[in-house]
Image 1 (cartoon, helix red, strand yellow):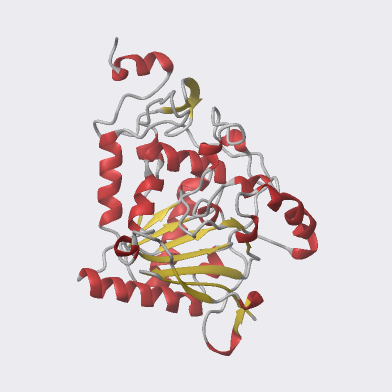
Image 2 (cartoon, one colour; image 1 turned 120 degrees about the vertical axis):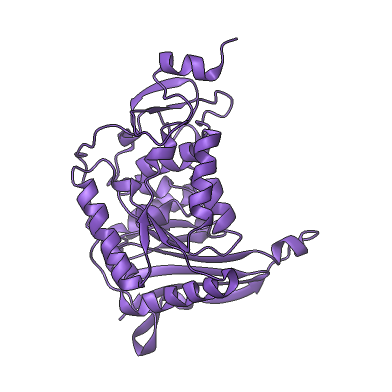
Length: 337
């Protein structure tokens, strides 16, 4: 039998990663070859897009709003795994917009997380901004640079861009799972970048393109380990918030994101492809929620979720915050007023 690296070119796949070259590569779902996706020329998607630069959220002082009084603190009942559970730490924030994410009160919360990490790690490295969800936009480079600069200004720390395309395009087919398998060398390099970061910031755009990159780069597993268990702060905006949840199925509901952006990925037929990073204790995220427009839609669609009672809807001025310290959990939906 031929080595996988020998047969990949004939299937249209990039060979396993050896250098940092940005030569074109592609992905597959199972053994289905797909056209070049990651590392391909940027193109404008003809799908309805929502601005990610609207909304405002307040997290401190008298303007703080807690929707539905959701703040809770409780203890895990993990029989036989108490010692493991007690070591887990999470600092997760998801929201609908960049403006919400960088508002003055909310960045006070983030600043506290960064200071906490500095005390525990001895230093604060650069935050990693992951703009991959917008990779198919014609203005991708300019938009990413502007977002990175804004984040540096408001967070007061260095922010580096980390495009998952670079790691995802080296994925190899896995017929057994029907989900491409990350290249080991590429995944190891990605883990090195994440392990040295002070924070992960995942931006909005096309959820399905981002989800494909998460699977093919191994980012989901890496973020789950560092942000879900070791306290590396994670901030997800719009699509970046959806992938942090239990499933990305909510991205279908409004029809804003075109799944054709990730050709060859059957997010409906292969439930594993739609599985999110699950950083939020089984919750699913529905951003850009407008009760006057989406209430009926959400009531109908939430029944199809594994945990419909854990669906979190977020208006453009809201954020969901999830923290965990060992057996103690705290969650809240915050809203500026």
